[in-house]
Amino acid sequence: MNDKVAMYIRVSTFDQQKGKDSQIKALKDYCRNHGFENVKVFTDTMTGSKIDRPQFKRLQRAIFKGEVNTVIVWKLDRLSRSLKDGINTLCQWLDKGIRVVSVTQQLDFGGAVGKMIAGILFAVAEMERENLRENTKRGLAAAKARGVKLGKRSKLFAKDIVPLLRDGLTMGQVVDKLGKSRVAIYNALNREGIDIKKIRA
Image (cartoon, rainbow, N blue to C red; front, top):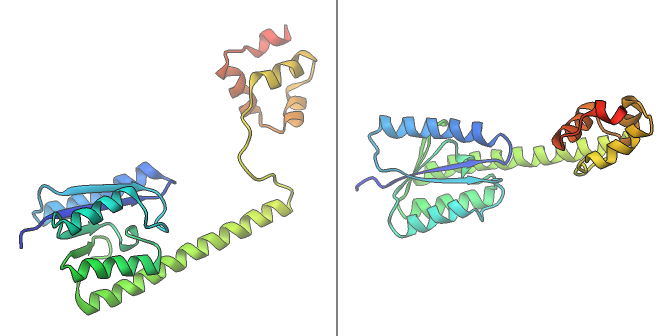
């Protein structure tokens, strides 16, 4: 069987470029070392808890059209961090004779043993996702209890700052009144080309 190889890369919305670059390097090194050429690349930037990802769907279509028979991933949880979705996807692929390789885990999945190992790894990934979600909830609840205002911060504009400075308020008083940092205040003024010295003149 001729190798029709695809690399699937998924990075979260955090640390996108660094995560993407590290995955690409590892996968390209693997392909080069194993003589794979003309490799298709599919990249998504979103959470792995959702199976409805644009490039993942493209990969699925390519597999079922017979355009791909080997899928290489950086780590198995790049396919999914959901136990149910991950197992279902992997079983579908293995039943079609698709080879699935996890580079960093040094695993080549196939047959009953491959499915069993994959089940364990997907379960761990789902547990990590749930732990992260619970830790985030606890952190937000603790912050709220301390009186921290949650939610997206409103953007600061010069029109919010200039009248206060013209009224003679010190920068410290402006900081207290607006609830913003000095850096945020100076950035807002600089963004609109306003010189604080001229305001006070």
